[in-house]
Length: 74
Image 1: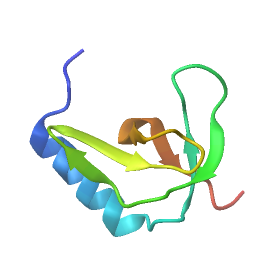
Image 2: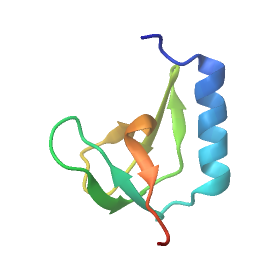
Image 3: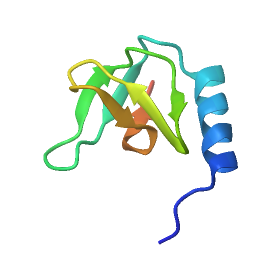
Image 4: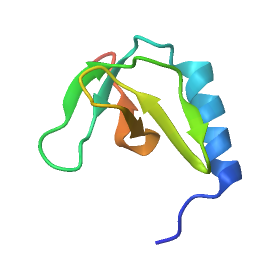
């Protein structure tokens, strides 16, 4: 499986930051275990070629591809 390009990750971060504010409800999928309902603790950002965000309850930054906005209805 190919890694997303730097440009694709930058676009993902920019779109995330346009749509998701710090403190928004999200679902965090850790490597092991059940998904966790939590909130963002920062805006998304790039570190090197990778996209990250801080979420409450996780030790440190987490890859943005492991976080999704929580459902808001139905």
